[in-house]
Structure formats: C-alpha cells, structure tokens
Length: 127
Image (cartoon, rainbow, N blue to C red; front, side, top):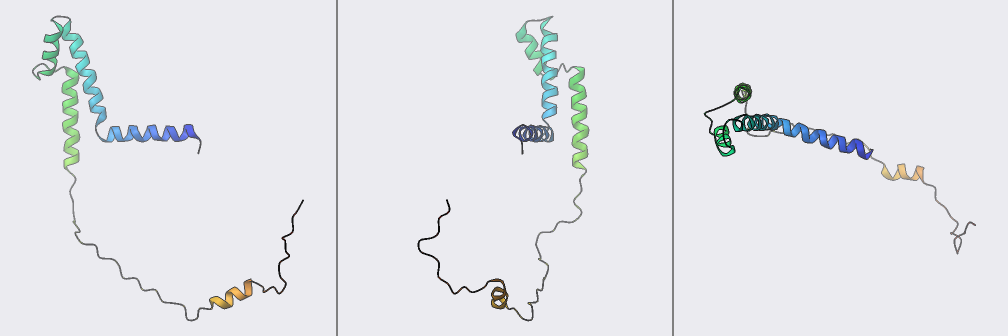
C-alpha cells in the first residue's frame, strides 16, 4: 500500500476517534472562550476578561448553543436499552464425523516416484 494513502488512513482514524470522544465540542468551546476573552477585553482589563469568561455567569450565545447540543446528545446516548444480558457463554455442540477410510500413505505413493539412481558427486554446476 502506498505510504501517502496509509498516512491518510491514519489521519482519518485519528479524526474519527477524536469526534467519537467528543473532541469537536472541545474545539467549539475553545473557540467560544477565545471569542469571549477578546470581546470582554475590549471593555475591561485582560485579567477581568478571563475571570468573566470562565466564571460561568456570563455565557455567550455559542456557549449556550454548545451546552444545549451536548445535553441533547447525552440524552440520545442514555436511551440505549439492553434487552438481554448473557452472562455465560454456552458453545454450540459440533459433531465432526471422521472419514470411513483414510489412506495417507497410498495418496503419497501415487504422487511421488521412487528413484533408484544415486545423486552425482559433486553436484552439477551450471555456468
């Protein structure tokens, strides 16, 4: 397999795992926090802007949308119902009947021929 195609597959796998673990919410929340810090720093010092951003009392519209979407996503995950729980493994019974007659030696004799002559000493060399 070509190396660039393999590398692309690895990147896609990492992106899928990132999304499956909820990494997209982390990225969106980081963007929202960055925008909030910039917005609040226009009217107050940077330290106050950072405090207002992370205190939870001043959420922006994007933060509210993220919180709402995360809540609805968790609700869908909680609705999974396990119908039957199997605690013990019971293997299926498989019966294998042996063949009536096995003739391994007879099969090998028909494939290989016996040779009477001895190999030449030293072995022949091809130029």
